[in-house]
Structure formats: structure tokens, C-alpha cells
Length: 361
Image 1 (tube, helix red, strand yellow):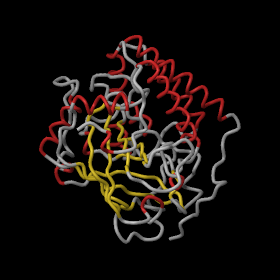
Image 2: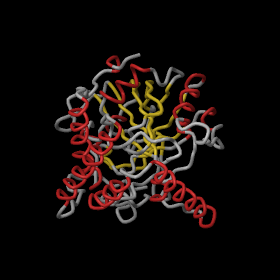
Image 3: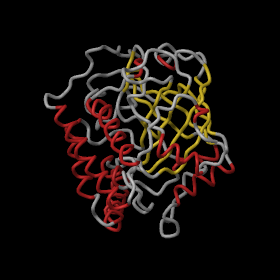
Image 4: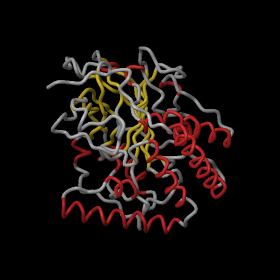
């Protein structure tokens, strides 16, 4: 199989892209202000409600083939990691509003040239449920942000109803056509267990001499045994969190980190993240294993640090894993701007956490 090379000219920004990015920042800042005025506290503009805040280790596989032995994964080794699992919305809603989920990974002790402005020896992978980001481009991201912005002032019951409609339609689409809609899943995700979920970069990143998308796949037997688990939100509106806490009290979680290396410029676009890269062109292949041992997954001091202090951003990256495409170029600016806004409002200083020991036990 021929793996396409990374090139510095691989990206093609839209002509008015910066205007779109400025619009995203303005709109999502307004959403955050609305949430703060309603709830009395500024929270993350996306993935506000955490379900587990845990630490563990990532082991890079030995003897990887050349196309996978790239960047951080060029040599086998073990790295400390911090992982935050969270629900999708930029407000803390009851779990009946089950939308997309997030898995943010911070890898510590990373060596190599870093992107400008990133001053810690770390690599962040900001992943979400679903293999694609349905908005596709920076302009699409702006349209999506405007749509979400209209829903923020709505009562929670209306948001729950909208998520239910999206989820039910997607169930029918999957049963009839075997092809659920990523857009509907974004707004109405199944009530599945957060530790039995696959998470994806959705957008491409540089992968050393190549380009790839990244995914985290649950592989522990205890996680796979949760395939049929479903939350009853009528019984527990914080059920995803409680399920994660209960899981980590008894079990280790194990994820395989996998890379889908770029092989076909026609079917695997760099600039449109709404296009799912066909696995027949290039499958996800294991590059590392993330082990999160049993632990108290929601201790008060640790959660405060994860939720209020620590920052996870695509821009926290080695140059060898630079985010690519319009959505990622937008995220590079959007994450920083919205984080700066939140920390100004809370008065809590942000930290680009450099050491695993900085995190409360």
C-alpha cells in the first residue's frame, strides 16, 4: 500500500476562513456568556460536563512498521497520561440530553519540536465520538455554532426532546439503511456507556512523514461487556458519570490508540472533515495502548483541577502531529479564545499542565 507523504502545502484554506473563525469565536463566546448568566459560573464552551477525570499510562507499541513509527510513536516507550471524559454540550445538562461525547488525552514527557506557543513537554489528542466532524469546514463550523447558539437559551426539556428526535431518527436510519447520520448522532447520541465508546480525532493531523486520523478503541473485556448497557435518564440524570465512577472503582480501562494513515487524496480529503475516510483505503491500526487503572475517577480536588484549571487543546502538539484542515485551523484559535474568556470570568488561572505530578491525587 502506498502511503501519501506529508507536505507543507497540503492545506488549502478558504478565502474567507479567518472571518468564519472570528464569527465562531464571537458566537461561542456569546453562548458561554448566556450559560454563565443563567448558571452563575463560566464553564467550557464544549464538553462542559465531565464524566471521569483519570490518569494512567500510554505504551507505544514496539516494532511498528515505518508508516506507523512516526513522531511521538517513532520509538517504543511508556508515557504518563491524563484523560478527561465528558459530554458534548457547552453547558451542564441532565443526561437525557445525550449528545456526542469527548475523550481528551494529555500525554506527558514528550520530546521534540513543538508548535509555536506550546511551552510544555506534552501532546494533546482531543477526540470525540463519531469518525467525522459533520460541519466539515470552518464555514460549516460557523453555521453549526450559530445553530447551537440558538438552542442555548431554550429550556432543557426542549433540548432533551430535540436530542430524542435525532436519536430516534438515527435508529431508524441504521435499521433500514445501515448508515446512521453523523449529524443526527452529534445532536442525539445513544445512551451507551462512556467507557465502551470509540473516540476519534475526526480531522487529520500530521503524522511525521505522513498524515493520519487518530482513534481510541475500548478493548478490555470488562468494557466490551458493556455493549448492551443503556442509561435510563429517568432514574439518574448524572448516570453517565456514576457509571464511569462505578466502573473505575472495580476495573481497569484499556484503549488501543490507532492511526488511519492517509493513502488516497480523492477519497480522504484534508479540508473536509465531514467525509469519512474509507477503511477499505486505509484501516485504523494500533500504535499504542492506553491503560487507565482502577481509581477514584471523580475526586473533588482532581475534578476541580481537570474542569477549572487544566487545558486540553489541539494546539498543544508536537510539530510532527500538527492539526490539519479548516476545522482544525479554527479550533487552534477557538479553543484558546474561549479558554481565555472562561478563565477571565472565573478568576481561575489556566495551566498548560507540564507534569503528571501537577494533578491532584
